[in-house]
Image 1 (spheres, rainbow, N blue to C red):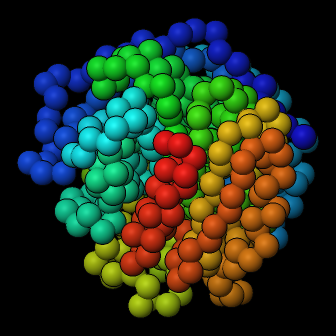
Image 2: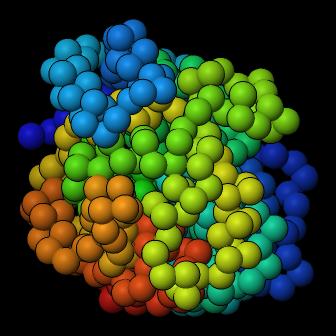
Amino acid sequence: MPSLATTAFLLANAGLSIAAPAVSRRSTGPTCSDINLTVTITAQNHAVPQYLLDGLDSASLTPSGLESLLNGVGNELQLALVNGTYNIAGLYCEPEVQVAGRENTVQLLVHGITFDHHYWTGGVGGTDDQYSWIAHASKQGYATLAIDRLGAGASDHPDPITVVQKPTHVEIAHQVVQALRGGKVGGRQFSKIAYVGHSYGSLIGNTLAARYPADADALVLTGYTSEIKQSVAGVVITPGGAPAALVDPARFGKLSLGYSLMTLEAGARSLFYTSDSSNWDAAVVANDWKNRHTFTQGEAISTFFVNDVADDFDKPVLVLTGHEDQIFCGLALPLLGPGDCTGYGDKTARLFPSADYRFQDVANTGHAMNFHYTAGETFAAAHDFLEGAGF
């Protein structure tokens, strides 16, 4: 049954402005420039009761207590109309290799919680193409647009409870797609758009396909399955979220207290990476932690109740997940054992009953797929899928 998020609807068209001058990122590889999109949206968000917020802030909250709290409030959430105009930052990249038939194809890259668009570049300051999705796509002839979701990176940071919720993210993604198709990014009208999400970005992609089945021509959903509800308690408890303005005032001191930041490095590492440290580079993981971004209470509350069945989406879908993903294939409580994605592909298939659906999990890989040694395998699987689907 579709969630309340699928009732989100659009009242206004997006405007677009591109930051000038365009800044070339690299002398070799893809040619990239910062862009800024101005989008106007209306969404049906959730009105969050104060006692739920008070419960989430409780220092004595346990996994069982959180589960009880969420189950108790789930049926009480009411809809709240939200509208506004927001600036969305992004990195647009032209490929270094020109491939016939891909001139008007673009990948829209949407990151997950605790990241910004640098998840797709190999991390902040990353120079090693081993971990860069964008570099791999460039070598295959694909243009890319990696956005900072609302409330992350250089994009606007509005109210973290009432505004920065999943329905808002879906409406923004819809507007970005319209800009890509309308010739407002990259100097041309893109006729093929592959939506590529990671984690929360994949949750957005699922709802986008349900709400706007004509938007994307293919979905690549990484770090994702349909089984997020089972891990909600662990996701909140294990990394020790706290107000970002208090945890790191130098970076986030101007943000509302509803923007949270992970505080437990070991807990975060156990959620995002395999327990076997031979599967990742400690320096890469440390850089990920140092440059971690915020998440909002509104994102958490508006996401973790139901999934969306995309009945009318009849295009190619690839769900690509690390085999040991704690968040989408486990309880997000690493002390109870590793994640195991065996069987999760069939469970997730029910969300895409009309699609050409495929599932693949990558061995020796956790949730942050792009930052494991297997990143190249992940990139190859996704791009082989796109090529096979006619992209």
